[in-house]
Amino acid sequence: MKILGIETSCDETAASVVEDGKILLSNVIASSVDLHAAYGGVVPEIAARSHLESILPVIDEAVKEVGWDNIDAIAVIQGPGLSGSLIIGVMTARTLAIAKQKPLYAIDHVHAHVYAAFLTEKANSLTLKAYSLPKEQPRFPLLALIISGGHTQLVFFRDHFKYTVLGQTVDDAVGEAFDKVAKILGLPYPGGPAIAKVAERGNPKAIKLPKAKFDVRKFDVRSNVRGLTSHTKGDYRFSFSGLKTAVLRASQAIAGKDFTLPSHELAGLLSGSQKDDIAASFQRTALETLITPVKIAVEEFKPTDIVVAGGVAANSELRRLLSESFENRVIYTDMKLCTDNAAMIAVLGFYKASLGQPAADPYSLEIDPNLQM
Image 1 (tube, rainbow, N blue to C red):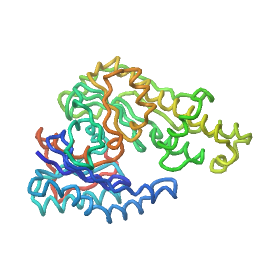
Image 2: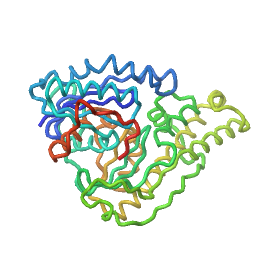
Image 3: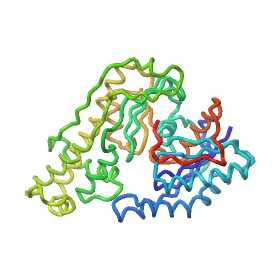
Image 4: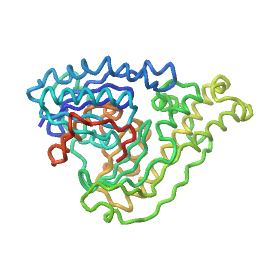
């Protein structure tokens, strides 16, 4: 079964064709990140206009080798995301589903991030040659840490579509914290790769930063599943706003200025080595904040595998720390599939179709910018 996936939740316009939920046949992405870099973050109107310009050429490129006659269904991001971005993808998918007479499946963006790790094979093409995919698909039960610019969640899966959200951030997502700290240090957007690069030169123990406190209550996850998707939230909580503020205060102190100095004026007062140390200390603290609840959840729920997904999953220091803690139990996908892409949308669409999940009505499917797992 070949599924066309379409992704337009934020600033990437993407389309991908995946076969049988594991074979990557095409993966096309048009990013508008360079347009947003000048503003230090995503500008919704610019993102929407970029999607409008790119969506049809991107889909054409993704389907070119396979051909529409061989596409069995279409899967499209429904939410969460920016309204102006989502509507471009959904309306395009609805139109194509009607015109091409294909079933249409609505996909949760956060849920789909986990399914990027289910891709284990790729077509023999030059564009896909550089992708490094897991050798085997994740095994259930599995624990998923979903970490990106907009989301930080810990989810326990007993099987496909049988899951419990154990915890999520109560304020900033971890990727958002990386972006904000990068801005304090005068580093470019997006902040994740920029922080990681300068942190390599810094001392992660140079600055003592506070770790967020979270409360973990033990509960029987099995009672929350019952063979259906569960919306019961646990208390494996994350928090990054306090850490972000602590970095700002530490930077002000290092610069020899009081707390009234605006954050955007700090970067010019810090030396290169000071920025390196601040970045390294922040990164280590943020990553340890992520790993601690994962360790607790692994002990409590005994997953077979651990999947780390989302843009922050591309962080090499995070991968090193997780490998130290869990050795071969952690499954990552290729770094190019950690950030937003349509392959993950297509994979989840395959499982929806093959496991009998209901298709969406192409005449009435609506976007859901606040969609939650």
